Length: 95
Image (cartoon, rainbow, N blue to C red):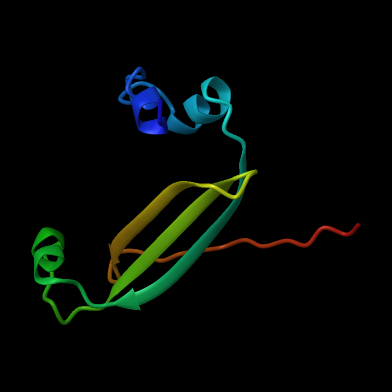
């Protein structure tokens, strides 16, 4: 049974997806990569966002991997650059 079939037993309108993946399906999230770029929308995306095709968007792509290096989640989001910003806090731990 693949992951999609296993997820069908959960009501995802009331279940926290990551809790189900880790707690019930024993998937150990290990690593994530996120890329933030800018670009122009397709005609369809511009219509959905209520902007012109010449307005620049913030585009974020995120990939989450399990401890075996398998891709668990791929996410791509388009954000109006006049309505959103990204803030990141970074720290370094001394060993």
